[in-house]
Amino acid sequence: MELDIHSADGKSTGKKAKLNDAVFAIEPNDHAIWLDVKQHLANRRQGTAKTLEKSEVSGSTKKLHRQKGTGGSRKGSIKSPLFKGGARVFGPKPHDYGFKLNRKVKDLARRSALTHKAKAGSISVLDGKGMDSAKTRDYAGMLKAFNLTGRKALVVLAAKNDKVLLGTRNIQGARVVTASEVNTYDIMNANRVLITVDAIAPLETTLSK
Image 1 (cartoon, rainbow, N blue to C red):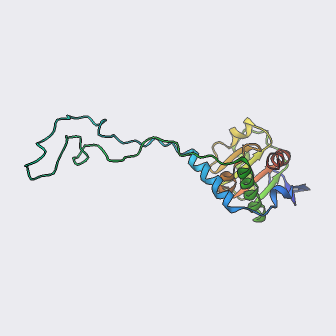
Image 2: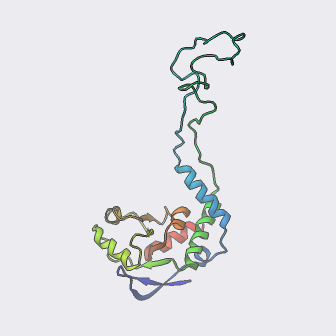
Image 3: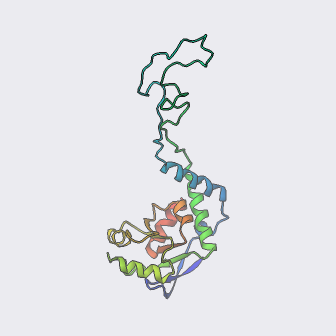
């Protein structure tokens, strides 16, 4: 597969970048995508919800009235779930929602996600020039050139670039990652994936192992 290489102003440079079909043109596996996205979102959950149990509620443990003979229900103490301000029965406890997913499944999911974006024409290759600026207006102009103003864009770099991170951090919907950090959720969540030329090789190497 070959795609045109674009400059920061959105215009084609006349050159083409060759993309590995083993990464960008496979038979997509939607179930692998679903599993990877599910794990990503599960790992983001804090899992800190907590309610007080009977032993944790503040109050007297004195029995309110005798067990039998009152004609009413049995009540242990004021901390009973039957009363306002009492404990909660089977309430949530802090726990980890994350789960394990095999590396091969995650790689398959990322390749499948990239394939979907490639088939939809939602992948653009950048020549990387002008990415040494730290000014927000430069990157806002670049996204505008690709009709991504107010939309979600995923920018994939070969390596960490503090200037790009600084220039895009205040642009809503823009996310910058390195080739080794790309995940299925970010790919599927973006309206367009912008990959720099020098990021293609490390991205393909990571996903074709």
